[in-house]
Image (cartoon, rainbow, N blue to C red):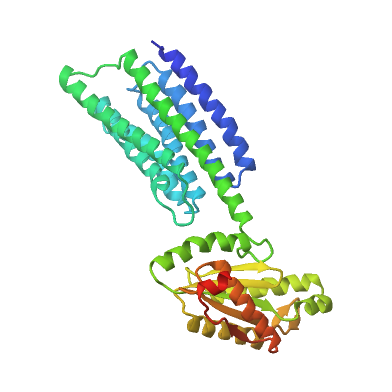
Length: 397
């Protein structure tokens, strides 16, 4: 059987490796603040581990030593919690962070201060740690709308499992006291089991945090690949990716979907007259206006290419889409673009098509909207034209 010394060495070595990884991540990762908290958590847990299992009086420490040890354990838990909230953009209450960190030590020291039995200090402190462990798990178990990663469940589950293990240890201590009628020191087997559980849950937690970071990096890279870097809107691939499921859902529910393809009139002359930097600023300004005009959560807007933009409007009929397009066209022409102190008049031409029983896919709708766009340009620009629905067979031919 593996002895306590071997387990303690293995646990300390594993934590040392994680400390190195997390220190590097705290300087290099996008989530550097979260990794900073988690580095503090690992260092604290490693220090507490050595202090706990190097003391022959474990778990019945002297009041002062126990207060320090459990405050360090509390700091480890509050740092896990704070790192999780920071990672998911939830913010950290500094007062709550401090209270969570100090509370286990204060419980242990307070019970001794009031002259209660050592067993009471141990039971109340472990119960406190069990509760705080569950609190620390909460950010990882909640489904955050802005960011959800499957690997966060590993962290949350490991913390909850550790919380349950601590709660069960309270029950076992009570059973031991009732059975023997006196305080007894844990056996070497029990200490080894405690160390094993700590090491297992620690490894699962820290591996989960690393997996979260890698998964988050993948999500960010995917988002970058689907985004137009100039305007911040979806690029062509991003629009196609976001609208595929939307169109399928609307077709199944027999809900209308409309497509607007928007082209900035005479954009080349804007570039030639004001320069490419000003031209880029015009594109960014128009992208902002398009996003604010099509601001419903279910609407998809993107830069289709060059000076062309696309909007996919859910639960919108062709007639409603024409009205939306005319409002956009009018607002753009009536409000000049302030670019670097220069007032630039910009107009747009818009083609509109519906995705319905006649046009069943985004590509077909874009093709019909593009034809309508060219009609708008041929008829003098700064206007809206719509596609006339045709049977699907006519499109295929």
